[in-house]
Image (cartoon, rainbow, N blue to C red; front, side, top):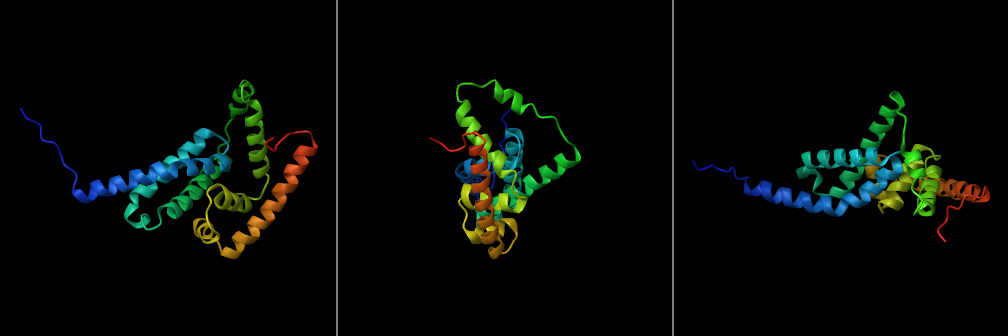
Length: 181
């Protein structure tokens, strides 16, 4: 007996190809942003998956500015995760596991120091800095992604960078190396 294979309509095939290309291009930077915004790689990967799923579901709408759309979805997915963790705290094993990794401990330490310092900033400043400098978004794109005014993006970025500089200085002063050599 011969099987009949379902063939996707031509429109769907091109839609899927467009989305696949977008995923390949955008995923690395979105994952880096999620890693900074969330405490664990697992949570960051989950947020990225949620982002891509939601973006795909609305692809016809999102494809006009897919990166901007995905940024906004990613920030919302991270916020949802924060709210969940506040209500349901979990014990994390990440710190203990990382302590066993010796070969690239210094690089990991610098990254963790930066992330630790970023997490000390107010949420809006952290989100703005991640969008502006990690995702390389413009002021307008950041404002759209975070659903805030452009002036708020500028002031939050300015204040966030100033606080970040001071916190990094304080970390370095305490004897923790945070700057690459």
